Length: 124
Image (cartoon, rainbow, N blue to C red; front, side, top):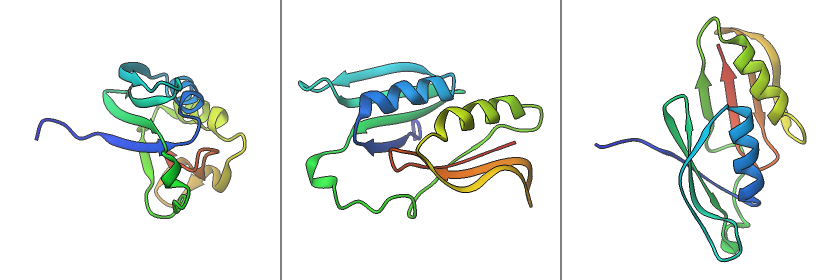
């Protein structure tokens, strides 16, 4: 296996890419835009891991949001500020499932579905 890549399909892919770049201090790598200027494929490097984002096609309106998959980012102790920063940027218009705070397995954790329908768990 050459690599593992996380892939997500969203409406408003340009907005999502911009928000995720900011939230995760990511860099935009290989990317291709469609004729309507949405992302056909965009790769974000997040701490050495690839999150690929693409515009959801019209046939994807019947998606199940937030309950079949979750992206978990384990930052590790000492990286609380990174978790707080990402959460603060992404929480607007999100469905908060577990607000930022301690949980059974971490001193700082948040679980939420962002405004694009992507479920995240961020923790140290």
